[in-house]
Image (cartoon, rainbow, N blue to C red; front, side, top):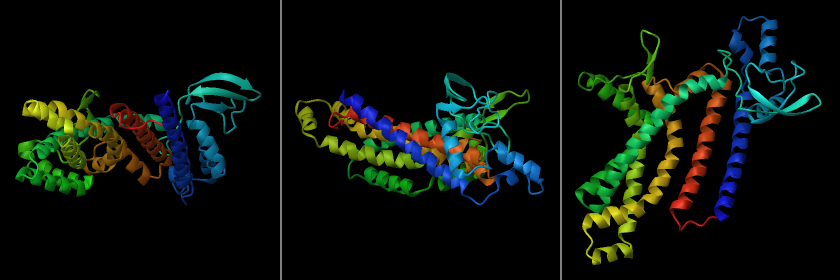
Length: 359
């Protein structure tokens, strides 16, 4: 019961966080002195065309009215005025698939997937635009997390069991240097060294996306374009995981049960890896699970450096072209991933570490 109450509380907290994010992001992008209709049609567009675009995207309504309608669009349970096609609450069945629950007068309560609106530039649904870019970004983030976790744990354990040695000091210096480096700076250096100067030996490209089209129009995956962005994105997590693993291992190695295990005659590797490392992994694992969402935002800068066509590059290009629905949808998606991963991390930590009090 305590665990269920704990999960419910975290879900409610995450729900209210998302409401706050929606309000802040919507207000931020709707108080800018930018005429989105003019940006869509061009500065020479006639008044009638601009008025039509403003009606299509609800730009003729006050911002607070549009905020309420935006909540109605992104909510899985929404109101729909299907009898009045000119109503702002009318859901176009060609764009939004929904299941009608019941009807009260002109309004119907419907169940649907969150609707993020349409792009100003392409008129495509935002969910379709972002859906095409999520896969490369997730591959980049997950591979960078796996890369950082593997080498970070190895370096952290090695530094702990060789405390105060030359290797321990060297690893600490390198990890401190890694923490201080922004991801985009690491990306520029890696691209210049391994993608340009040493390209004849590495066969890596300075810029390139994970997926491309072949001559037959089929989608192909170019895995070599993943290596440099993955390493650049994983430099800072490696440094943090290394120091966290080292600190946790040193704390565990000083515990009484470790000294007892050594006194019983257990082997060095058995004590170190079976007993110490296993118990030292609790904070490391929870940290790793929380880093995945952070890497999604870090990927924005890396994708720009390497022209890696993912969610981050799409968001930056949409922002430069004032395509605000796409930018808002991308930010909300990343915020949702952050909230979900934080809830998952809290639950995982409470399950893995019995010392954590579940309230």
